[in-house]
Length: 80
Length: 415
Image (cartoon, rainbow over all chains, first blue to last red; front, side, top):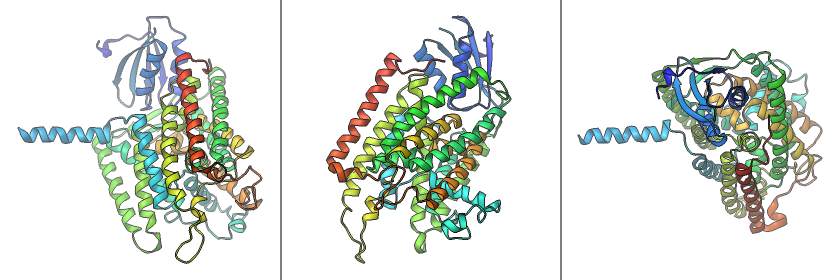
């Protein structure tokens, strides 16, 4: 899947936040979308690139991957 | 052709050593071995000695050293020099190693947090310093290296850390629902990878030159301390090894990886330290002086309410900071400004706490006892075998509980 062509249903700005806030805000944001919809998380904490996929795996969501942008990265999560 | 293969292998080695994320258990084993090595070389390592010394220098810099009573209590016009104080050198080595790792791996960036996080950083640091004062150290000196050094106070702080992590997490949940000021607007200033590698090489040269500069006179031990702690900082950053995560994750996501790896690390550490310390009991040095100071390393008088309450305050602070004593320092090394704010306030709080503890004799001494709890070197009550059995039992139980919770989510706190 080409991550750059994804149209997210919601975007969460977690830039500048450090552990554990990006994950907690993601958890909260995902409660606000429907199953099958896509959440885009904008982050800068290097830990998120590991924490979010492993959380997705545990909680039944699908992490579609991440792309680097200028000064931050985007992680795409499809709600399970 | 063969040159290409060699170049590819060299690149692969660089990637393994400097770019890949190391597994939690790999770091657990490395940290245990390096911690044993530190004791054999000179003394156990901890993070509080460094931040306290730096906090004292801040107090000195603001002209309050005399006024607050530091000069009287320590009978000195200045704090100890930060380049020759072993605690401070530990901190410099640790941050230096983490910075080196972050730069070579391309993870270094100036990460500026939103405003609310900056405010939290101040309070988090103050809580951590207060907790570390009561518990006889941070997560290293009060818990990890405490249990590892066969002192009972590590178990008291462990109880406190579990409770404090839960309270801290509940506060974070409350904050997310109720505070909307200053939650976004963070910025990151990235540095070009080539520049990061230049910084990394500069840090490596500085660490080696620093160690070499200690290699004469009566401070030669500092060279080894600087290098061993740099390796520790390097390993912590490469594996993002964060002890407070071990206490938080089981209640937040259920993930037990970090908790399991801390349990493993402590079990290995305790075996090594038991072997080393047991050799020194009852010995005297060449001048006939008792070497009891050796087994007394990191045996503190906080096995009791001090360890538990200190652990609660410390973990509450560390959850808000997003890093414990070590987690804070390695994140300083990767450019996280929030932790740059936590560190001086953690240091100030430790400095004031320690001074008061000394002034009012809170922790007493191993002979006269302590008002924060008791001094218990476990082998004196249980023998070395019994002590190791107890440590394995507690670490095994912790492992099983978090592993069971990972499947069942029984201990999870819902938002």
